[in-house]
Length: 428
Image (cartoon, rainbow, N blue to C red; front, side, top):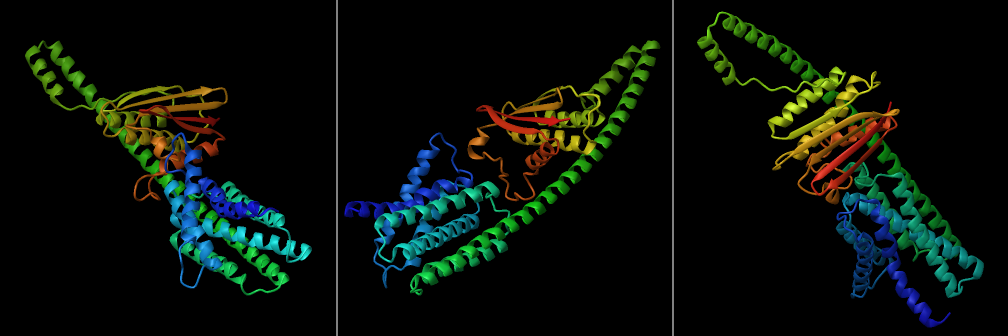
């Protein structure tokens, strides 16, 4: 093979880690959701590879060993991944360590097998095949992780992150150092086969720990949702009692006013009505949807929204019977309206529009609310932006659980730059 091709391939192979890894790290959500994501990703990959090349050119005491060589790749990949994507730092580092381990170990196994078949001086074309197979395994590993895991936080606590990172780094470092200490091809193949098994074992532990933490988090979400629903139901019952008391009191007002009118006590009646007018009697919207729980929620949330200066429009048509239990209805309508009210806070002309109607065998819900800016541009997954994200941001998780329970669909979008919309279809 011509020397020029070998030189070009040797140069380009230094970029391959970066050209494969940076785009594959899109398993984490982007920090910036612009129109040119692919171009920005490609630029980040080239920049990461260039920085890595520049670092390799620096004079290091004792020279450049393979561990330091690979560590520079990981450092650059981690830096540009953190700039490009949002995610837990430990999760990103763990992904890169495991992926680099897989690439190196499988590359050495392929190379060793080729060496056994062709001899130690196999042609450079097979070197290229070895590299392609190594990088291909690198990319496949990313794709498997992206398909089966949620990488926003790995659902791992710091302790589990550090344990897995420690094991992964020892495995990675041993793989890099071992090349100097195994003189026979068979021994190398055996060692890297064991190292590959170790890497996949660590990956399995990541899956296992992640699943356990995810299940624990889901149970916590369900427990909190039930507690919130029970609290809301208790509040609704109290509000309903207050409404009945208010109606009874208002009925007494009317009876007394009617008696004064019959007795032609016009001056006293005028003073009495003026006194009633001065009292702050709450204005209550009387919603009659056919479901007492929904009526109570709409009355309470509408009154609360109006107290904050939020304009509300509700158009509700419910099927009879409605095969959804009271707690689920409370969670569904309560979380939809709570999220909308919270999003409308501190705006000049806030509004909430809720529409509910049956469509064949589905119940369709749509809620629009005003927003100050495009919320999906900065937060496409609607992750909680509050400091205590584990105990906040429960609303969207509860809605997803309800949609899953009723084989439904959840869709959210920006209708325009200042209107956010959530659409839900529940199979009845």
